[in-house]
Structures are given as C-alpha cells and as structure tokens.
Length: 328
Image 1: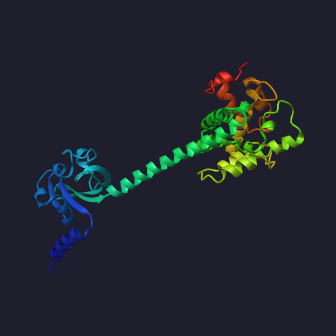
Image 2 (image 1 turned 90 degrees about the vertical axis):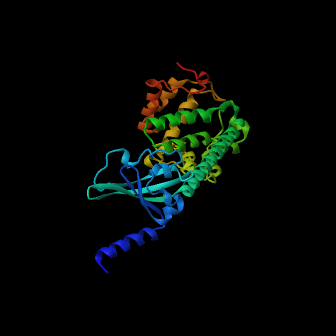
C-alpha cells in the first residue's frame, strides 16, 4: 500500500471515528465536505450549499464567523454559537486549511446545549438561594430591631455606611457584600438581652453592661449556622474589638482584627453617636466624626477613618433616612 493511499484511508477513517460533527467550508461559505456525524444531522444533500443556510435557523452567517473578517495563515480558534440545527448550541473549533492557494475551514462541532441548560439552571438556582438568604438576613435584622425600638433602622444605616466605606477603600464586591450582611446582623445577639436593659434610659450597671457585651458572641453563634461564603460570623464577633486591645469580647489588637470588622466598627460608632439612644439624645455627625478622628490609629483603623470622614466631608454621604440624623 502506498504512502498516499495510507494517508487517504487515515483521513477517511479518522473523520468517521470522531464522535463530533465535522465539516470543511470554503471561503465563499460553501459546504465542501463532512463526516458521518454531520451528515446524520443535515443530510447528504447539504453538500455544495451555503453552510449557514444549512446550519443556522435564521439562514444568516454566524456573527463571529472567521470568514467575515481578516483571517491569518494557519489561524485556529473556537466560538460558541446558539440557534444551530433546530435551536441547539455548539462550541465550534476551527482551523484554516490552505492547499494550492485555496483556503477552507475545518470545523468541529461540540453540542453544548445540555451543558448550557444545566449552567443556566444552576445560575437560576443560585440566584434563588441568594434571594432566600437575603430574606433570611432581613428577617433576622428586623427581629433584632423590633425588640429595641430606639435603635430601629440602626443596622440598616450601619450597613449603608459600612458598604460605602468598603467601596471607597476598593474592597472586592465579595467583601463588600460580606460587610453589608454582617452590618445588617451585627446586633442580632441583642435578642438575648432583656428589653428593659436595651431600653433603659439611665446608666447601665456593671452587670447589665457585661450582659450587653455578650451580644457579639451570641450574634456569632446565631449566624455561624448560616452557610455564608465569607466569615460573616467572625465580622460580627469582632465588631467591638479595638486596635489597642481595649475592645471586647476578646481584646484583639491590630491586624488580629479582620479588616471587615474594623470597617464595621467605625460605621457602628459613627451611626450610634449621630443617632438617638435611650440614655441620651442624638449628638450628630460632627460629634461622630470627631470621635473617630480623635481615636484614629488608636481604637480605629486609620485608613477606615480617613475613608469614612471623606465620605461625609467631601462626597456628601447621606443615609436613606437622613432626616432622622441631626447635622451641625
């Protein structure tokens, strides 16, 4: 058997053995050749016809077909095309062939319809899960605030400010989302504190203060059972820690405190000082910014403080219920 005949048999049998549809298309879109897999899909009468008239439901060339633009010698690549052969999706891998000055594309078709449908279903399922999780977060936040009417809206306002600080500092979308969720739930642990203590108009006793200080740990214990993709429980647990170790519940210092918790701490302090509390009237934004500026680098992260101050003084940050927050 001659070498030439061996090459012919190899080519013929390879095309037949490949489990994907294959064809060869001329530069004028004429379908020149196809294997058995492709013939089963389009019929033998497709040879000699325009490839797009055979393959596409709308009878037009694929928008990203290599023949529609400049093509380089030995060019190869792949593209995904929907709406082929009765509405199916294919990944088409191609390579330019050149013989005696004539050019054609060898194309291999991988049917990805089922894979794309599965991906779409997974995305929809994930979106539904996210909506369910969001609803759970808001329900828990509302439950906490219902027991403490004086701080109704506090967690929402803290979430707005903490999210804005995180965005200004250039944190990733994932970290911004984690901070927002943690902020919406940061006081959930107060559900275990008696309402008469939460709403007490006078100074708390040491025992009452110790009970209040349990809310970060209780909050962590409540939230840790929810399968968040980020350490939301630890952000909640650490939001009363301070850089110099003067915070609670663990007395953590410096970088031992998560950046997300440092952001939440500043947002929490600013909103708390600016707003009304059972034991005092609202002090306003000026007093809140003065507190974090005075303790910048001591209790509060300097970069977080700078970002927060700039939001108010340079970028005009406002809460959605701004009318409830006194300004100087």
